[in-house]
Amino acid sequence: MTVDSRPGVPNRHGMHGDPRYPSPRRLRRATAFAIDWLLHIGVAIGLSAVCEALPELAPWSFAAAVSSWIAVSFVHRTVLQSVFHATAGKALCGLCILKPDGSWPGFGFLTKWWVIGAFSTVLVAVSGAGGDSDKEDDWFPPVVRLRDVRRLHVT
Image 1: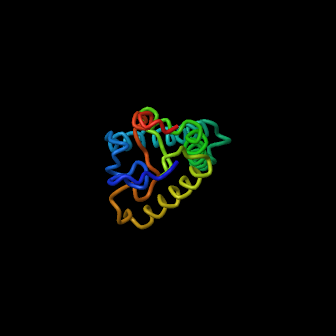
Image 2: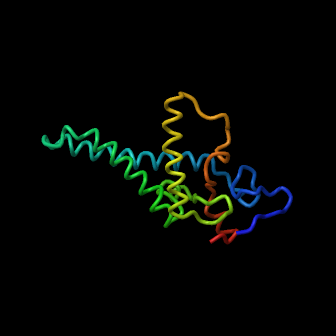
Image 3: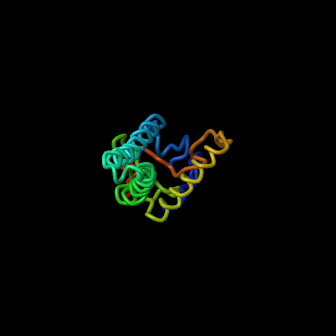
């Protein structure tokens, strides 16, 4: 994909105010995140409950919950998203993820962002505060409405 050099069009696809992606998406993105988070934590809680129900596995309940959450998060946000261009939450909310150049992200790109997300989550938890930017566009790959992508024929 080439960079659109028209005046008023950001270099990165999907940035706040990008006229190529006019549909509002902030609430959809928050809802998609909540759905995905509930999916990941639901699997972890379910596996932990199974471990608790079996006396020989009860000591492994916490480890099973944490490791399954990590595994489900990784597979969901990298493998499945590289194939379908969306997580379950994004798909249900009509969103998809793009690379900043407007192309579809691959497994390597998504893995890099999964690792960055994991480390930033730990850093935010340790520091007790977020970053100094109030725009998610500064930190994450663009998430846009799928209908806007279809309208642009970015496939």
